[in-house]
Image (cartoon, rainbow, N blue to C red):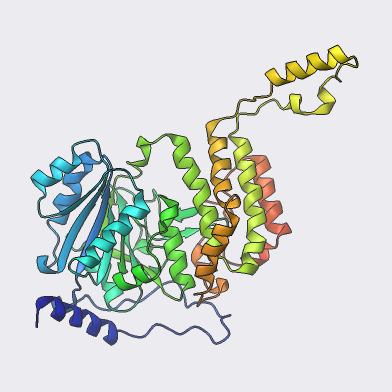
Length: 441
């Protein structure tokens, strides 16, 4: 029997030996058990699965040595590990550096930037076509990892405690945390728990989490492919929130594994793009995630409030400081003569353009990607809802801060509170939040 078959059999045996997940309640109305967990023992050498680590790169040559240098020091059997770098059309020397200094890494080079979601899916397919990984691991290129990181990250998946796991992420200097699990507020704004906080004992406790951070996560390979992987229409940002939420909807669990330690240069790639292009994704993708993953009853309450709050945020960045020219009470009436009316019409045609900041336009374009393609997104939504195994009420606790108000501006704060009360969101999420203070705690 070949090595691959032996390792595959050991992986499946370990999964079968693990405790079965707690069943859903018959009526689907009871909540999940407490968020804290008691994980099983460390994996034995025989239980270690075949793993493929997929890393995306776009003009990230400055990060490659830190990332791949640490991966070369992993305490993991080389015959059970494949590392793939998907280069998304870099025009720096990333490809040359990888070929010269890290030839042990499988390199796939794209002609253009296909995005984080599509690039990760591409790497996953390549891994499955190659050695046939049992577990897929996704890692940002601006990370370095502890030698025990991979063993600890795949442990909960192999033991059958969850289908996906998320690492403990520090800042690059290790002084503060970047992520100890994830949540979101009711309109889809993601939360990295523990962000910029100093380490504390409570962050060393394994727990259930809404989503695995796409920068350092593991997932059962077969399940990743079965649920559709990362949504490629997201391009980048919130694809991990959407995937984790989708997994919970379909009956799976996602856990935070605090012994899987890594260090991160936060948002180093996104800083290289124009701000409005990032804003479009960060406005649009929460809409798409909510539209796809909420059940019908919840979406009918959330969507009106979500649209209202997005409109207010757009106006806040629009640059409109004087709206008197739009208000009839501040505009003189037109001329009564034919010549006068023609003159007024010509004058208005010269003034028909109005300056609007690019951030506000990005918001409108992003929201219209949903509203202007309604049938498409209804069909995408239907695909997920048809596979629903868990009701929304069992997932809400994982949001962590469902009623977090993301802006302090007076009009926005009033609108947030007003829509929460008017659409019954305070009752929907009752008892699951504790005010408006820092959502990352």
